[in-house]
Length: 323
Ligand code: HEC
Ligand code: HEC
Image (tube, rainbow, N blue to C red; front, side, top):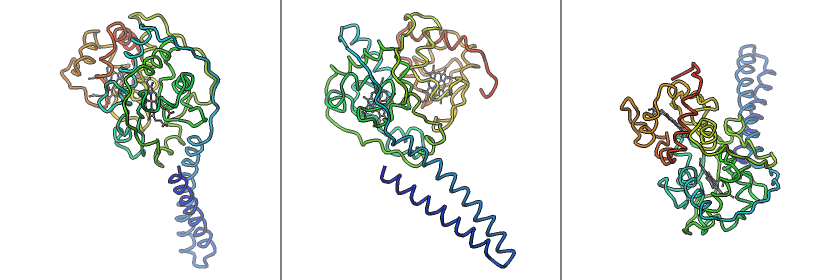
């Protein structure tokens, strides 16, 4: 935060400097110097003013206090709930909250390295009972999953991820699992977004979509191998993070480039093609699916959920755009 504040002060200084140079050029008696100076310094003033405004907006969105939504949860911790929670945590949380993509959730590597962009320190913390979990009640955890906001009103990095689409039952199952998971010591550096990160926030490419909203109940369709349930899996499973909101391969940065247009590819694939691709990492053309496509994670879904996901994607209407 201090680093970003200093960056902003320097940027404002640069804007003032170029504005002053523009004014000096305007006052010049020599025509050539006057117009070259006014246009050149004037454009630079505008450019830096724009960059400063975008970063300032990102700074405000990131660091302003957010409402701490009211929430009331009680978690029984039944054996079914624990099993469901462990399964979901392995599919959904381990990709970021662990070094090797497997449970336990001892904390991950720097996500900014994965995007190949200097986004700052973006580590998913240790959320075993010996880590961050100690400081958070069940209600706090539920709120973090839904809105991404911490008890004190701080916006956490979680607000940028689509885990808010998890149903009440699934979110509670995950919390039940977290509480009784094996405790592991160790901490990751706190979130420290770079000016580029703030630029993406300022532009709305990464946005805390639910942070200001009250918490509404989310009910999943009954678990079955159909496209209604598949849409639910696709939503909480964050396919749109990389494949774009319309799943047509168009997602703004910092989403990694090169994600497939699923609306074109998936209607052509058979169920077996899809199962083989997600369970082995090799698609029907023999192409080895490359990172960051998380096929290993997706392949952990049980047969019913994977088939549901297939049914949903297979029924998409192809949109032109890129393949
Ligand atoms: C795409 C990556 C990603 C995924 C997936 C993810 N997290 Fe996180 N999580 C993060 C990052 C990054 C932070 C650090 C945020 C911060 O400190 O602002 C975080 C922080 C947290 C925190 C601590 C928030 C705090 O108070 O500082 C909890 C609890 C948490 N995640 C739970 C989960 C659970 C449960 C799941 C699975 C349902 C999950 N996360 C999935 C990246 C992820
Ligand atoms: C972190 C980014 C990311 C996420 C999240 C993601 N994908 Fe992908 N996906 C990619 C990239 C990149 C490719 C292209 C990989 C390649 O061609 O080797 C891809 C390719 C694919 C392909 C085509 C593979 C092929 O060989 O043609 C399918 C199918 C697919 N993704 C399905 C999904 C589904 C379903 C989800 C959500 C459950 C999902 N993806 C989530 C990045 C992602």
